[in-house]
Amino acid sequence: MTADALAQLRADIVEVGRRLWSRGYVASNDGNISVRLDDGRLLMTPASVSKGFMTPEMMVITDLNGTLLEGAPGRKPSSEARMHLVVYRSRPDINAVVHAHPPLATGFAVAGIPLDRAVLAEVVTTLGSIPIAEYGTPSTPALADAVEPYVKAHDGLLLANHGALALGTDLFGAYYKMETIEHFANISLVARLLGREYLLSREEVGRLQQLRGTYGIASPAPICSDPSGGGAGAGEACQVVVAPSAPGEQLVPNTDVTVAPEARAAFERGEAVEVGTDGAIRLTYGQLTALIDEAVRQLT
Ligand SMILES: [Zn+2]
Image (tube, rainbow, N blue to C red; front, side, top):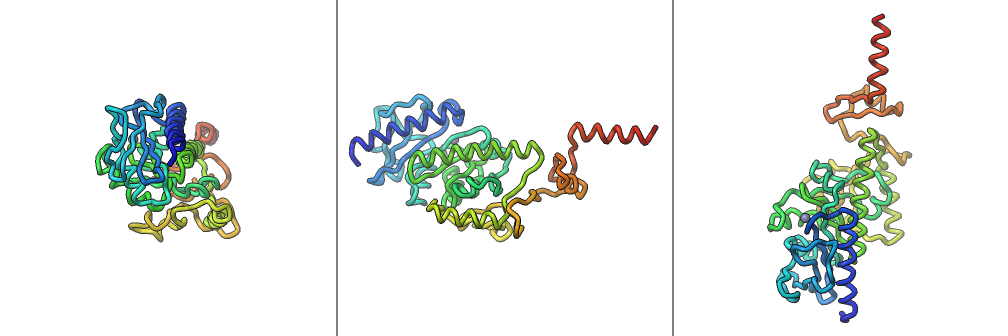
């Protein structure tokens, strides 16, 4: 790698860090960014710096075991370097890793809700499913161990009670996936707050997978849209996406929750109802008022 190319990568990491910070994806010294150099070494952010205010000379260079090879005096590799190393060892096709704590995606990670529903065509074609890796104490081998089974088949994942991880063939590719994860979390949250959600049908997901092939968008693993067909270890072989089969339909109402018949009927009439996993119906204020008015009318 030429000195100019290395200088450009250092500058690119500074720019990606500035974007993570300015979009509120990291607070304090959170997050870390790394790039695989063409000689196999890794260029990464140092420990204990705000990602919004880095300079190119702050970056450190390590080998694939995380041993510090180059860095300004006092600079050490990121405390989450192990998590990056696991990715580079498992995925020869990946050359950049971005880790951050974007608040909406991290909210899903805290709630234990994976972003694995087939909802947006762009997400299906670029990221597929975004599962949650089990909790591992940050800065310890436990976090790297938790991430390892998922990175084989996924370019984006949530980290339970922690944040998100995005992988790319280049640095900006990894950064853009982080943006997509947070954007998807934002849209998913709004749809669920509105009380209705339609899923792409399994057949439509199949068409999108073909498009992905046509446009040459690489995928680490095929999408398998039947969660029941997976079982233990499915996350390594394929990406499990919630997409019900509905031949002839592109969109289907989400039936991922236990739905009481009354709520299902209301949902199909297009009324906004919130349905809990307990099957309880939660009415909007307007619906509740209408019910009370009707009851009062019958009494008088
Ligand atoms: Zn973190």
